[in-house]
Image (cartoon, rainbow, N blue to C red; front, side):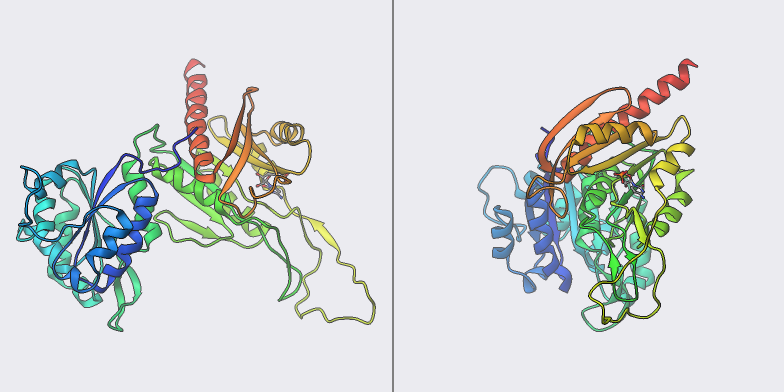
Length: 411
Ligand code: C5P
């Protein structure tokens, strides 16, 4: 079965410096551990004023390090030991002070010494007051680090910071940091240079200003697919009815027609379309500008009209080197219906799932699916997290691209 924890076997040193965003590093430490990483936290003395070492020790299940001159358990100095076993050094939050020290090579505490002593990749998530962030000294220091091999900087968000000021300085969201880390750490088959267009969520078709026709799709499969492709170096665009903060573009849509417009706008430039979205097959024929009132009669009739089948339309426009993967959520004869749609919509593969199986599929983090390919292949994936299914689909995309390349070369 696929690796379910994308950071399994990785050692990450999480350096926490002394800004109020240090409290968010607790969730980060926990998230990294849950993704399989062995997390070792190093706190600066200022960070200890905001969060306690005990919090991190409990969350990471590893000792927390604060002092440069702790008593040695082993013969090797601790900063060398930690620095050498790390696959990634993440400094989050990175204060203006730590950024300045790293830019100039000052290593006067455990965290900065570890960074200097390590050959691992280094990721910084700056967080500070917007005036401090905009200050020419901070910008100059970030510029130095950006151009230094091994460093990646996750820019802070705009918004209100703890001291009440508005501007750029809020630490990037945990989702953005975690997605960037899985991307940085991925070592399997890559999708670099490929533009992968993913759809997700369930469309909503308005009846009146209050009501809509919708479905149970949570958008989780689309996000998992987009994250997995991004982690493999692809240029990802996610068109979804569910808004998420990600380091790749997310186009938010509501109706099937919105989704069609967004997908068609991106389709020509994409190498693959993975259509996980549950698109409403029908929409109300007329939209009532006012809320429909209760009537005297017990029944009201809602007239529906067919929505465009986006996948069907794009299957017809598909170029020889493009790949399209569709999804088929079925309540009976999954294989039969999925195989029929694979052929009718001119897809390269289809992912079928039985929506009558309890606890999986819509809204769940897991699913069990069968993947059929146009060349007659069939793979049954037992219940697993949607992210693991997405990893299978990324492997499949890689195979399909290679097969298309081979055909193009032999012509
Ligand atoms: O035919 P059916 O709706 O079951 O096909 C499911 C697949 O087609 C999914 O990949 C879904 O995203 C896509 N679809 C579409 N436009 C529709 C309905 C479904 O692109 N109107």
